Amino acid sequence: MAYILLGIVLLPLLGSIINGLLGKKLSKSNVATIASGSIGLSFVLSIIAFIQLQSAENRVINVDYYKWVVSGMLDVPMGFWLDSLSSLYILVITGVGFLIHVYSIGYMHEDDGFSRYFSYLNLFVFFMLMLVLGNSYVTMFVGWEGVGLCSYLLIGFWFKNHAYNDAAKKAFIMNRIGDLGFILGMALLFITYGSLNYADLNKPGAITYTSATTAIALLLFLGATGKSAQIPLYTWLPDAMAGPTPVSALIHAATMVTAGIYMVVRSNAIYSLSETASLVVGIVGGVTALWAAIIATLQFDIKKILAYSTVSQLGLMFLGLGANAYSSSVFHVITHAFFKALLFLGAGSVIHAMGGEQDIRKMGGLSKKIPTTYLTMLIATIAISGIPPFSGFFSKDEILAHVYEYNKGLWALGVIASMLTAFYMFRMLFLTFWGYFRGGSELYKHLHESPSVMTIPLMILAVLSVIGGLLGLPELIGAKNWIGHYLDNVILIKTYLGLSHSIEWMLMGIAVAGAVASIYFAYQLFVINGVLPVEDEAELKWWQKIIYHKFYVDELYDFIIRRPIDFLGKVVDRFFEKMVFNGINDSISSITLFLGEWIRKIHIGNIAYYIMAMTISIIVILSMIK
Image 1: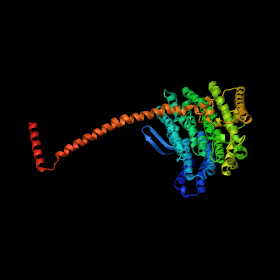
Image 2 (image 1 turned 90 degrees about the vertical axis):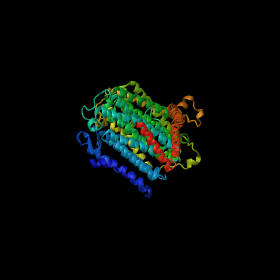
Image 3 (image 1 turned 30 degrees about the vertical axis):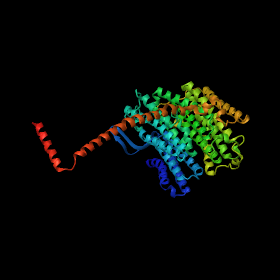
Image 4 (image 1 turned 120 degrees about the vertical axis):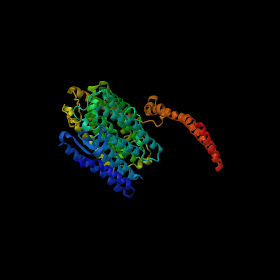
């Protein structure tokens, strides 16, 4: 197993190195084969590891390769930890990641940076695998920082565009804020419990409540808010759409943004002991889910609609985590990976057909021109809206049931956010694929379906978006679902759903009825009545402008953070740097020059003068001694 785990992690790194160093000398087909093949082999090894894990004691395999960080009481090995949670994550990362790599072959085929793109993409997967397979918080942090670096490289992939560079820097810097919380949380965790290794922390009685437990949980959660784009550190994610569309699929579906969910679930023993921290997680998740869903209702960029959808869905997952429904949130991570990857790749197919256009106001009637893309995106849209029997219904319903039992107010936030999700997703679908084409007759003639290398991954993800909910099917009849049972050995303090069957059916009925009503409203508005988004912002009502401008949060951050820092920098530059520091430096240099001039006058090179000066000096010294 040690070699299998090593292969899972190192194969993507090997692909990245080969394409990074030799990519320009290789043909595009060879680059694509190396990149996709390394992830495909990693996926095969992940399946083997998953199968072998089932026969392992307590379904845990811990492999230490060598001593890594040893200092005083701190002893951190370099090794991997395979258990129920990490085994599910590596299957999603490598499986969905492989489909995204294959799709990228067609999407990026004409790009000059083809080999560089695949080198970055492989590196991204490598660091994500390090994050979820590492057997300590320190190893997790290495992967954590690595995916942050790769997100910077991929968001700013087209670096000649300064706006894209700004988006990459924004993602990188905002994540550093969260990372500070993660580092402080790890430090306090070590001080409190004496270790950062899962093997030590998972021992019975190793994690007990102390005065520092809540602080540890909140500091770790600050890291999660950055990586998983929750309030207040969420604004980087919509701007991350600057990168190539397959990158958006990888970030939003299978890798980076799910890292925060993984970290909280991995730390579930800590969160389960702190009601305050759990409540904070639930409130932040619920508010984020609703906040992002509202913003998405008035966006026109197809990728930004999906970006805010991701923020909202992540909020729903954190809402579940706050209710201690850890396995339910992991369940939604998996189903979300299927339909969100499909939505982004489908959006990429639309953009490919539209010659790079992303504004849904210039689309319409595309279902006849790109039918495969339309049908697969329709399936994904139904899934994310929570309509049975598609996958999103099961995972979302399970979260909402646990939240209802935990806190009725937070449940209401989740239900409203889910209704808005159904509305804005079908708004996007209707305006993109139904009605008439609004992009001009010349472009309409050139519309075409994407090549099979792009549509086959869409079809596979469509199937998974339909059947993925089977992992939670037994929950409907009161039995413990498979995924909940499978994660039993990871969730150290377990919570069970105690609702009666009648209440469960009622909650499902409310959720489904709300979604159907929202879809019907969108259908009436955009199909029957033919309402189209306004072209000019001036035509928007005042409250629509607020939503369209994302509640002016970026402008608020600019006003209260960036401008004061810029002002302080100018003050420091003008008064301290130029007047104080430069003044001190100039004074020292002037004094040095003056002394140098004076001393130089003494040293005239006349030996008789030197002898006379020495004689006088000796006489003065002797007279002072007396």
